[in-house]
Image 1 (cartoon, rainbow, N blue to C red):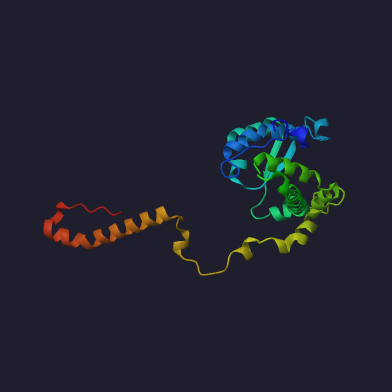
Image 2 (cartoon, rainbow, N blue to C red):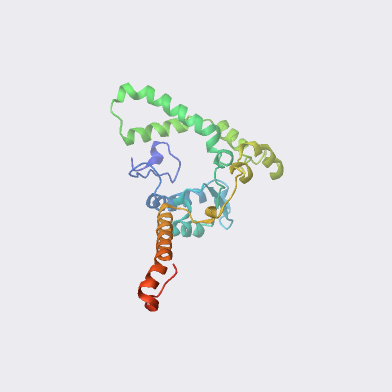
Length: 227
């Protein structure tokens, strides 16, 4: 399935296989040029080649830590904006009605062809997904963009939007439970550091205990080094 457009996919579509089906830096780098071209060829967008295009992404590592992809997006005048953590459920249009419709249509089509095809492979699934995605109505997309305040005809002021979604977000004051803090909270986290810290502490205590004994035994010939 080299040309996905012949099978109903939008222009500049591409399927990239990864070992575990999760995004990798290599897969993101391979997809970036095609994605950038596709965005720049969208209706209306293509009429303004000198205007910057804003693309919002979640905080998945590959989206933001691959320099080559950032350079490609910049060359195409595409500005990347990272969403705040744990906010995709109120920021991403796809996560609203479209995602539910996609899954429903995919399940329906798989049930229809399961007994006729028998054994499925990745290309069978891709073909089925293309048919299922085309079954999603435009009104479903419109409803999803309304739910995240990105539909241009139904947008409300930002302050009002924040009030509407306030109960769906966990701010710092509500996310962290109040408790007594100590100096231990200021320490860097991580098991390797903790093990190193404990080892250094034990050495310090050992030296503190042995110092008087060693001084009595060997006099001033021992130089004590505080860790």
